[in-house]
Length: 200
Image 1 (cartoon, rainbow, N blue to C red):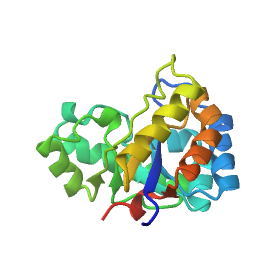
Image 2 (image 1 turned 60 degrees about the horizontal axis):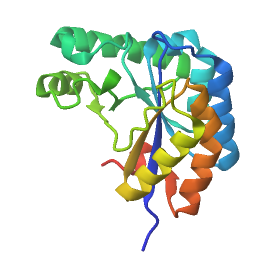
Image 3 (image 1 turned 180 degrees about the vertical axis):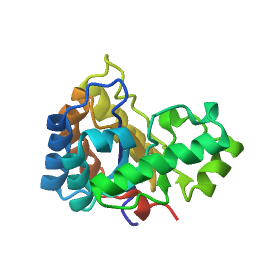
Image 4 (image 1 turned 90 degrees about the vertical axis):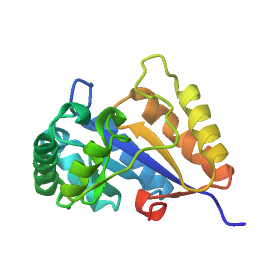
């Protein structure tokens, strides 16, 4: 029986969150030491604010996707607004990360992931939305590293092959939990891969 594949994905957001290159670089350091390839959905405004980190993500071989430019709920935008927002983010990601994020996209807040109008507009912009299977809510202030370790490992292994885990690049608890998450998933027999390795 082959190892179940697990894709760790990180949403990077400038929006209203305390986001510093230190935390994000530490995530990349941990992934690099473990030899793990992850997926980062970059918000366009984030890429503009942290160009060195955006370029490092791509340079180290992680898959780069588009997480919109303004981090607005997609269902509140018109079709033209969705396409414009994705185009602005694509331009910023291309300029600062040096890669084209197409066709990888994730709706901010997950809003619109099941809305056919939103998905059609996203597709016209050259993207496909990629939701998640395991959501430990690492953005909640009350989440501890131990909480995240348990929720991610148990959730991913229970899901089985192809589990997509949603994490964020800015919560302090996420970087604190990440080494144990990687160790626990490996101990559980999981193979950690990019989203493109579990998605057709």
